[in-house]
Image (tube, rainbow, N blue to C red; front, side, top):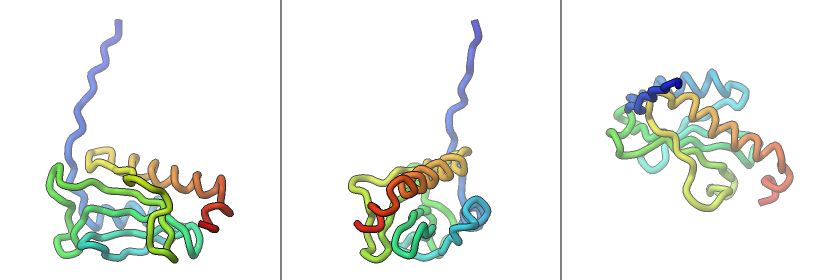
Length: 126
């Protein structure tokens, strides 16, 4: 019988530099644009001039580091920039600030990109 030992996820400090470097490398073609909303650094990844992915980093614009352990998570939102609101109702998918945050963030962003690609005309008309 094989035994698998799983390690618990551990908190990882994510700096603004880490986040920016990851988004610019992983999603270079979307030209991530940095901004600040509600005292938090955000990144917008435009899928069109009207629709895209907004990443709420949990990083303060002045501190350059994420919120304390358990205080906030990275959130990913399917976003309408013309109306300045999310395209989906409910809570935005989160990415926990653990050692695998890059993979989790990439997956959340790619999920939204696939949703957009499957019904581009629909999302553009909302």
